[in-house]
Image 1: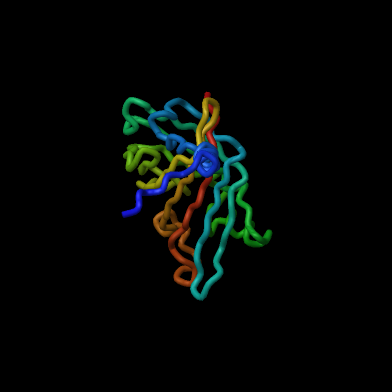
Image 2: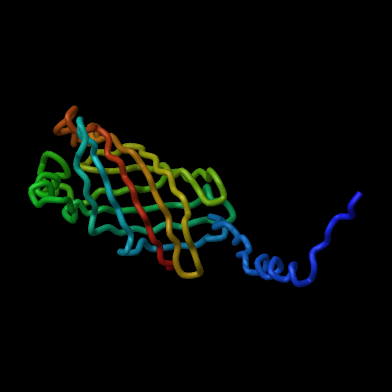
Length: 196
């Protein structure tokens, strides 16, 4: 029976150097660790999409928004979010689409200058994720809506999230174009908060 071979010092050295060069796994971002009060930064990105039968649809974003949120490190469920969109700032691929979105058929910016969201509950779903429910008000109508939030980055001065949500247009009186255009608006947001 042959004895097991041992690595010579010359052969073992490259393996030791390789092991030392491998990155040590960083601690995953945690909502509790990121506790604090933040203001939403203008560098955030708020995009939306309304699907169309046969493909295509309407995609756009909002250039103006404001808000703040607080993460309670002791109990994430006591956290809160306040957010305001300014529909006049809506941007799309074409000016005619922007004008249509601002018109009385959709946002009716002549009569309603803001869309607001105020959280009523925050439910932690993982170390870095939560579901936020709250009251969304658009065109004078308020409904309960839900968003999925995932923490992507944080440091002592700032924090970043991805936020996803699906909202039906009809209850807010924005159902023009259905069923050719979907009744569902898909929101895709990258939100950056600056510590207050």
